[in-house]
Structure formats: structure tokens, C-alpha cells
Amino acid sequence: MISDPITLDHEHTRAEQRVMLALLYFGAAAMMTVWALESYSGAITPWDRWLLPISAAAILGSALLMRRRPQWAKGLRVLPVAIFNLYLVVTLLSAVRFASGPQQWYQTVTGMYWVPLAFGCAFVFLPLRQALWVSGTTAAGIFGPLLVWSARDALPPWFDDSGPLLPVLGLAQATFIVLLAAVVTLRNNHEQAHAHMQAMHALARTDMLTSLPNRRAMVEELSRALVTTRRDGRPLAVALIDVDHFKRVNDVHGHATGDAVLKATGTQMAHQLRASDRLGRWGGEEFLLCVPDTEVASAAALAERIRHAVQTFPHAHGAPVTISIGLAKVLPGDDIDALVRRADRALYLAKSRGRNRVEVLAA
Ligand SMILES: Nc1nc2c(ncn2[C@@H]2O[C@H](COP(=O)(O)OP(=O)(O)OP(=O)(O)O)[C@@H](O)[C@H]2O)c(=O)[nH]1
Image (tube, rainbow, N blue to C red; front, top):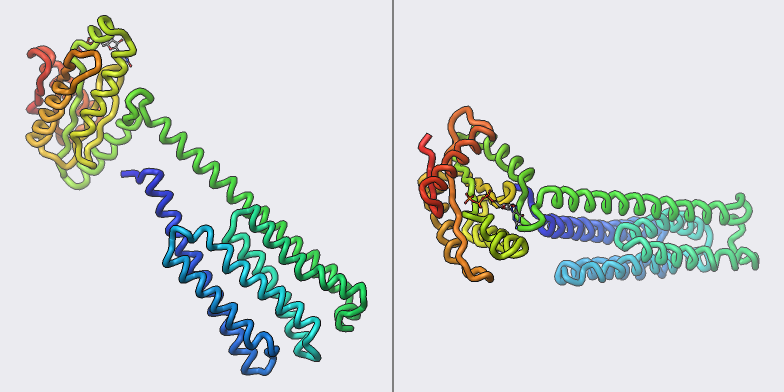
């Protein structure tokens, strides 16, 4: 059976949450690995010795908080992104300004390597507008001071001597932000189109008046049920259900009352079913019920329950409404037409034997 959109959405959110948490654990572990490598090789700066593990711990902490409070997780996502981006701005600018010799070069270059990752995190964790804002702020936080220092000749000599490093780096990072925004926009468009298609698919298979599956959906249901029955040799019963003297309801009480009766009858019948049974509007005042995995005797008992529920329902127009039900079981070699035709023959019997009854076609 196809999962309903709410279940699918819930599963999607849970899967997304799992990926986000895995990324945060991985990120914290990567930061601690960098810390260990740099500490071991002596390339670590005095501030990174503390800032790096503190930031990693803060990211891990926010991951654990998101796990503990899944209902806040969406709002909390900005936290690890802000921690990482802030750490990167501080450590990079400090390296340019306060580190010296090879340590300064190493910390600046590796810092620049991590900047695209900061943008990437923003676009993975946050909605598009927020991601653009965070990335823009991060880029401004890094390149703003670098530009000012460049204008004042306060940058390390190798920065300007080795070529137009600052504008090229800035352009590369800006291009990366544009690329990420484009990818996310394309993905959002794709998701919207997909959701729209799902809605259209559901609409095309739903009867507007009763909100039950329509004939198209029931034909699909029947063909699925027939495939399963043929494959597993499981029983299958199908019932055609027709409202008795429905023309009279329309003629006496009006078309609007007729519509209300069809709606209420559909709802009453649906209340009697198990999750695996499928009821749909076959057309006009006729409904079709597909009862998989059920012997015809049990299906007849279900049909009787449905008939009784409809008969006893107190309609707003004050008169009882009854239904006739024709039931048939699947036979070897049956296709949809053959099966429904036998249910229709059984329905004809129910009508001709006085209505408000269930008839089963033996073969
Ligand atoms: N209000 C309303 N009436 C509908 C709808 N679809 C079909 N009908 C009416 O249902 C009536 C069916 O009438 P008949 O086929 O003569 O059957 P019946 O009066 O129920 O008689 P039996 O089936 O022999 O018991 C027709 O008058 C249709 O116009 C609908 O969506 N709304």
C-alpha cells in the first residue's frame, strides 16, 4: 500500500535529522583530528590549542541537544553553523594578524581551505535565505578585515607578493556561494515539483464528493490485489454496493440531500473496514469494496455489517437509506472485468430479491 503524504513527510524529516547529526559528529571529530595533528607537529597556534577543542565540544553539544530535543532541532541548526563559522573567522584573522613565520602561512592557507566548508554547512543546515545571510556575514567577517589590512599594508608580505591572492580568493569564495545557492534553488524547485506531482496524483485518484478513492484508484487497487492473489494464492473478495432507490432520494429531497447521503453512506461504510480493505466510489450511487486476504464467508459477514451500519445511520433528511451488496470471490484466471462482472451479477440478485441485502455469487 502507498504510504500517505504525512507519514512520508515524517520519515523524510527523521532521515534528514539523522544525516544532520551524523555530519555534526563527523565535523566535531574532524576538528579534533586537526587539533591532534597540529598539536603533534607543533603547527598549532596558542589560541587554537583552546579554541579548536572548545568549538568542537560546542558543536558536539549542539548535536546532542538536537538529538535530545528533536522538536527544537530545526531551530537549533543555526547554532553549530554559527559556532563553526565564528571559529573560522576568529582563527583565520588571528593567524593572519598574530601568527608568524611558517605557522602564519600554514594557518592562513588551511584556514582558507575550510572557508568553503563553512558556506557548505550553512547551505546544508539552513534554509536558503538564512544560509545566504550566514555565508555573506562569514565572508564579510573574513574579507572585510583582510581588505582593510591590505589597504593599510598590514598584511604579511607574502600575501601581496605572490600575486592577486586576496581578490582571487574572494572571487573563488563568492563563486562558491553562488554555486551553492544555485544547487539549493534547483533542489527546492525539484522538491516543489515533486510535492505538486504527488498532490496531483492523489487528486486524480480521489472522488471529490465522498473523498474516497475513485474508480481509477480502485482499478489500480484491484489490479494490485489480483497480482498478489495470483502470486501467493491468497483469497480475494470484491463487493459492488449500490444505494437503494437513490433516484427517489434525489427526487423527493433534492440533489444536495442526495449528495449528503452519498457522502454519509461512504463514511459509514469506511468505518466498518480494516486497514487492508479498500472502499471506493465506482460511479454514481455505486461503490466498490476490495477485501484482500479474506475468504468469501468472512467478506459476506463484513458486507452484512456494512449493510446494517448504513441502514441504521440517522440521516439529516430523516429517512433511512439502505444498500444492496453483491459479493464475488476471485476465481483462477480472473481479470478485473470478470471479477467485477460477477459482483455485478450478485448485486443484480440482491436488487431483484428485494434490496437491502447481501448476495454472494457462489462461482
Ligand atoms: N445527488 C446525486 N445523485 C447522483 C449522483 N450520481 C448519480 N446520481 C443519481 O443516482 C440515481 C440512480 O438512479 P437509478 O440508477 O435509477 O437507481 P436507484 O434509484 O438507486 O434504484 P435501484 O438502484 O434500482 O435501487 C440517478 O437519479 C442519478 O442521477 C451524485 O453524485 N449525486
